[in-house]
Length: 110
Length: 118
Image (cartoon, rainbow over the protein chains, first blue to last red):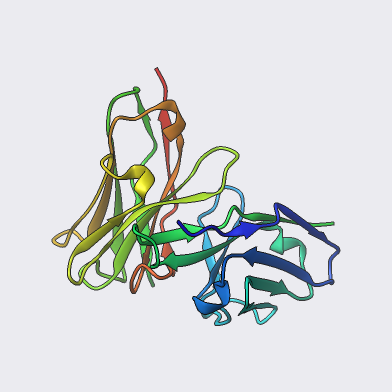
């Protein structure tokens, strides 16, 4: 089945830019979605279809996807952005189609 | 406003089954897909399966095939996830999610803690 690889942790100072990557074989050819999950809370969709934002998500959150890497970029990072971030795709290419999540990246705001 | 409200925490014995519910308002499961995801202690999100209303098909993760059943009751607009043959490794927070299809999920329940312990 399809595998998504994320760096376990990223640290950034407030006001700086955080880049969280998601690696997968030819991931640029499929849509990637990103979720934010804070401790004790449900996941929140922050980017869908590579680069679209749901209503209510700040413009500071953006996404890109090309080649073997998708990236979630958070500009002007705030303390409230500290959370786990997960990339997700629909794997239609295997014998067992289904949703695949990356392992998650813990964003720490210094 | 869309809300998914899940049933309360459960404590189960190994080998038993658990059935978690997810009641929707603001969306109807006759039109929207429902998915179930879990997060085990110290681990990330893990997809268990989902149900697409048209044509009413279910997709289950291979890991849970044969142990999980996802259903919906259109009369109460409630989705259910039943997991059988529980073991301690199934102790987790279980979330329902909903979206237009199983591509991505806009809406989420608050989570249900299932503890499996003898």
